[in-house]
Structures are given as structure tokens and as C-alpha cells.
Length: 198
Image 1 (cartoon, rainbow, N blue to C red):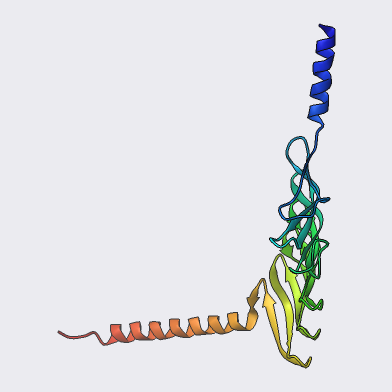
Image 2 (cartoon, rainbow, N blue to C red; image 1 turned 60 degrees about the vertical axis):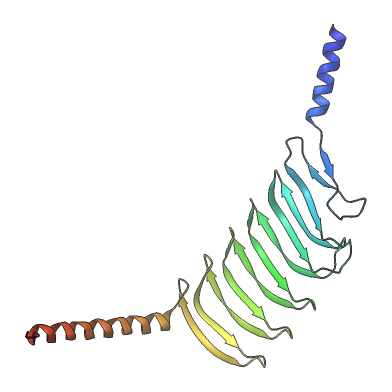
């Protein structure tokens, strides 16, 4: 009886600490994604397209994205090709430096995320590497002076934003609303002064 009980406990203890290794769809033979005994994703998970090209590598901890991630352009083979974008996750949210690239490898956009929201200085580029625009984000909204450039690097516009709103456009809209209100009041005043006779 004791032998059966010991054997049963041994089987349960081994079974409870098992990990599942899963071969990703269309992935090469030696690559495995790991789930722990509770079915949670752990470690680096790789995804492949129909042709076997590595498309992404994302770190997981307890079924949440945690750590670095990289996505690739198709056509790079099973080891990955040109990097499309790279960044980091913290507790399932984008958090930290972020870069998106053109197929040529030239940076298209770079900045930083804070708890899944763009925060701090962000810059986007033309395919030749010239700055397209640059400015600050606060909680995923443009804030402060944003500069826009043409392909030759000459500044074309400078726009001030406050909490995601173009300040100049907001002022113009406010003026327009005040003018309309004044016109409506004038019309109402004229109607009172000159009522329509029947």
C-alpha cells in the first residue's frame, strides 16, 4: 500500500512540474515555444508565416508580454531577416524605447512608450533618413512645439499642440464660434425689434 501511495505521489509531483514545448506553425524543427504546467506562455515565443519566415519574437512571463520584442519583414527565412520594429513590454504593455524601420533598414520612427502610451520625444524620418517631423508626446497626445520638414531637411511648419490639440486651430475655431454666436444674437435682436406682421 505504501509503495502505491509513494508511486502515486511521485507521479503527481512530476506531472505538476511539466512544461509543454510547442512547435510553432511553419517553424523549423528545433524551435519550440514553451507553456508552463498551468498553460501560461513562458520565454521567447516565435511566430512564422506560411513560408517559414520568422515574423516575430516576443518574450513572455506568466502569459503576459514581458521584455523585448522584435517583428521582421517577410522573406528573411527561419532566422529572421530585416527588423520591422523593436521595443519592450512591461506587464503586457509597451514600455521603453521603440523603433520602427523601413524595409531598407533605415529608421522610420523612434521614440519611447510609457505604459502603452507614447511619451517623450518622438521622431519620424523619410526613407532617405531625413527627419520628417519631431516633437513631444505626453500620455499619447502631442504636446509642445512639433516641427515638420520637407524631404530636403528644410523646416516647413512649426505647430504648437496642447494636450493633443493644435493650439492655433483651436483658437481659430473658438473665434469662429464666437462670431457665429454674435451673428445669431444680432439676428435674434433684429427679430425682436422688427417682428413679422401678419
